[in-house]
Image 1 (cartoon, rainbow, N blue to C red):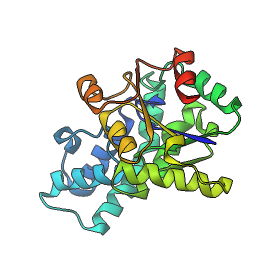
Image 2: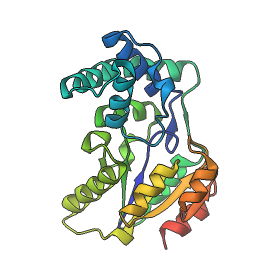
Image 3: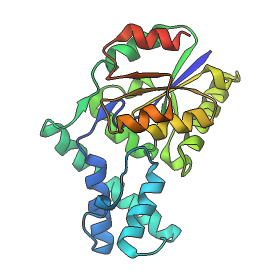
Length: 230
């Protein structure tokens, strides 16, 4: 049995900056600070980490748990509007080839498809809903499961093992993302790692992180299936 874990932003879909705009507006609404996300990169981080960094930029100090919870709630209230705007304006798009790859993987016996994303679970569902891809994933690890991507990925694998009643060893887990942070987290957990460069990562950093597979997107289906099939 194998588990294939997909990052979301830049790996499955490009949501036209909906998450960044929703977080900017949430912090501005609560604390009056504008465009706080311009001070750091959201790519490859968990939402909990991004909430903390955005609030630090606005407040000039570490946020309290209550302040973090408040900005998360405000972010999730704003996110549906931002995703809809991205869809309506044509800025929301699937990474090329992803639909076909997911359909092919779903046909393979013993292959489980899950999410390994820094998005909190409600945010992940909101971002994925317009794509038509959500039903492919039966489990996942999310940004609400921890501050680090390693904890997110390990949580996803534990959930897959619990759901199937079978332990999934590290060498049977395949992590697919778009940044060097996805690679570093996957390798730290002992998992296989592959990257698409169609997302938000920097190619030099991706290469330095050393994934097993680098591809522009998922259109070369044979390459991805050969890698996952070992």
